[in-house]
Image (cartoon, rainbow, N blue to C red; front, top):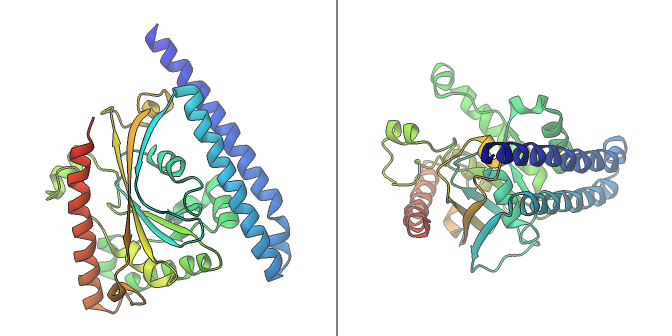
Length: 294
């Protein structure tokens, strides 16, 4: 009986999520037809703001779907003063594809709509492509370490591409977001990496440092720490509600002046200083996660 109930819950949640996303992205597409056809800056700017409103309403939609179907218990621990009028650089630990929904729900109407870094390969997914076009989600092309060793110029190409994608987010307040670990944290990955952190993989700073270089309006770094009660992390566990109990700790850090308006690609001192700063935050984050475990 429990298995049947879980299966029905997961299926209903999945269908409602698809309906919600379809309505949201269809609205975005219709609203942005003039933006794509008319090269008038004032129209594009107005429609960009309207797109953000649709995006926020879509987030509210699936937030209430989670509460309705799963009875989600998202405990948000936030003692920071946040504003939708500021630019932010957002980072988080990464454990499941469900993280994106929890982060969006936790940040809804507290900060500007979050823009996630997306791999260029995902541009062929219709929903993802529409999000990029209508909400200026940044696509990045990250070559593998092996490819860069064979052709070092690829690293500079990746850097230029990231800068160009992020520049589109300077028109209005935005939150540029990246999973600092670069991949989902699993016991296997943690062991292979020999991470010095108990609950985290080592942070990768290239993408977030480049975003900071591109969007000089960013004043704060926002760190989201996600702690799930359940040990389950697969997509079905999210859909059927096994992962409904979660704590989200939000911490805000002022960007140090010596880390602003720098060139990550060519400035070795900046790279080192940024790495040290993020590692300090990561060490604090690791301790906080340990304290907040269920």
